[in-house]
Amino acid sequence: MRRDESSQLESAGQDSFLDVTTNIVGILIVLVIVVAMRVKSSPSKDHDEAKAKAESLDKQAAAVEYDLRRTQQQLETLESESDRQAADRELLAAVMVASEKELADRRATLEASAQEEFDLKRQIDETQRNIDRGKEELADLDSEKPPTQTINHYPTPLSRTVLGNEVHFQLKDGRITYVPLNEFIEDIRQSTRNIYEAMKKVNIVGPRNGFEMHYRLEAGLDRSGSAVNVGCEFQLVPLGLPPGESVDQALANRSDFRSMLSRHSPKDTTVTLWTYPNSFGDFRRVKEELYRMGYATAGRPLPDGVLIGGSSHGSRSSAQ
Image 1 (cartoon, rainbow, N blue to C red):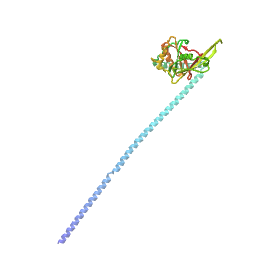
Image 2: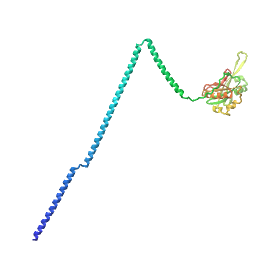
Image 3: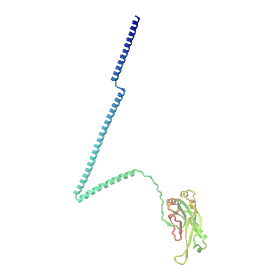
Image 4: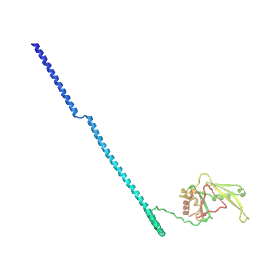
């Protein structure tokens, strides 16, 4: 009896285990079917992204196609406008050619007198247009106020030969220098005791105020042939640095220039200015000041490289 009960218990336990196993397998099958159905019914994430990109590309392609069509339309419009302008130019050229031809035909049909009248009328019209343009330009010039310039006027009397007292200055490189010509002549008189010896060589006196005088005596008969005249040919040779003072300094108060002039009365003194090309502009300044001071002025222009000089046969200065 116990054996049978034991066998029955074991058989019942095996049946229960098989039932449980069968149930578990069924549940797993159901789960697999559910998962498969879900996978089949819903699209994958990658598929969604690819679909979204495709839609975006379709939109971009449509936009590009739209811009391309607009650009093509604009090009067609520009080509049409260019064609129209070209046609206008051709039309204008044709009109000009026709006008010129008509003008030539009209002139050809006119008689000689009528042609002259026609040409004269055209000349009158052209002249009138030039007059009108000139009036307009003149009106523009009148509307502009030019800068006011003050011009100092100094009377210029007739020149006269200097016969009285004469004072000499040199104008060169923007500097004015007293030329002691009168003093040198006195030196010659004092130093020349043997005229015949002096005529055989070049003599030198000085220096004075930065100059030396190089001179040679010369003798000759007068016009009657009964007397011997002794003449002198000289040059003033500058020594060392340029002497004197600048023109600005000379025209200032208490300058050496004014000090030298103060020794000579303006009533009977002529100031001779030996002037080089680079100081022609200074000559007028000095002359104006001398005129204001009451001195007559004589100008002696000198080329570059030529020394101050003279001879007994030379001309006298002319003062103004």
